[in-house]
Length: 130
Picture 1: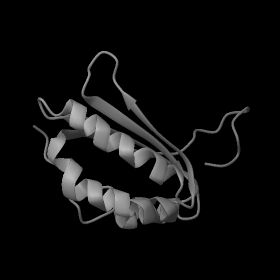
Picture 2 (picture 1 turned 180 degrees about the horizontal axis):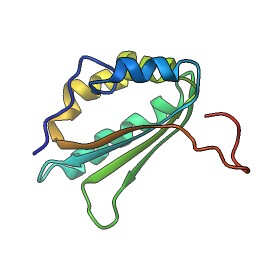
Picture 3 (picture 1 turned 90 degrees about the vertical axis):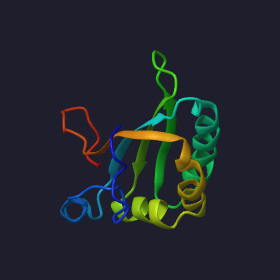
Picture 4 (picture 1 turned 120 degrees about the horizontal axis):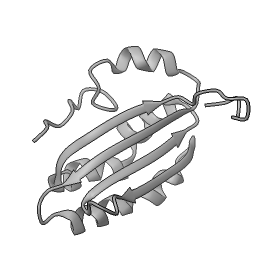
């Protein structure tokens, strides 16, 4: 079992402060993988699904989607796209629905499989932002 990330920063990353300096005022993409506790997948699925619409309605949200692994039920992935790291931090640190989830829904998480902060790799056909 992997330990949960520290809660002292927005994403539970040890080097979050350095990363945040690089991301100020640029679009940010985040992918988060969560693994439900045995017997907790249905409740976690419900609790995670309840986060989607309120998150999509937050200022600075561009996309916020929840997926479940077809081959491994109980493994969930959030794919988030924010206009800035500040918008994402506001969501994660101050969104009432997120605070409620951390106080209540966390109990069904066995582990956080991964948290990735992503930047788009420029290509000749990719948008210039994010």
